Image (cartoon, rainbow, N blue to C red; front, side):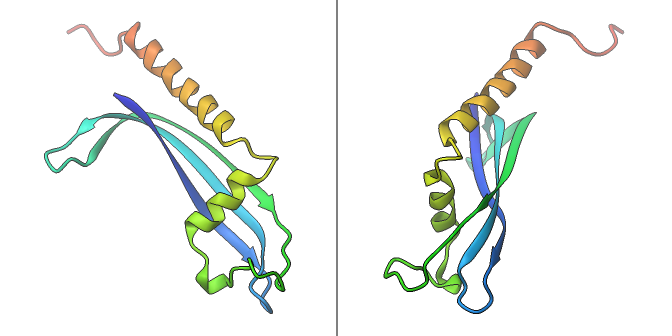
Length: 116
């Protein structure tokens, strides 16, 4: 049993004239992986916690490091999110994992359903 964290970019807003990204919408979903199937695909329990947010960005299209909009990848954008000082990747993942672990611990000490 392991908790997995999946980061996703939900949406981007960019400048139409030069493709510079001005707004990033992101989410992190933590899920309890309870095992794998016969093809080694993960099987998840019902426990899930999510945090999402927005990041307003600035850019300089004349810099050599500028990436044209059509060349961007989700990994490029996630790196920008994680490098921003307002977003603490480890803190977010720890908080979500603790929420899930709390539910798992609670479920192991309670019963649900009818006794017959």
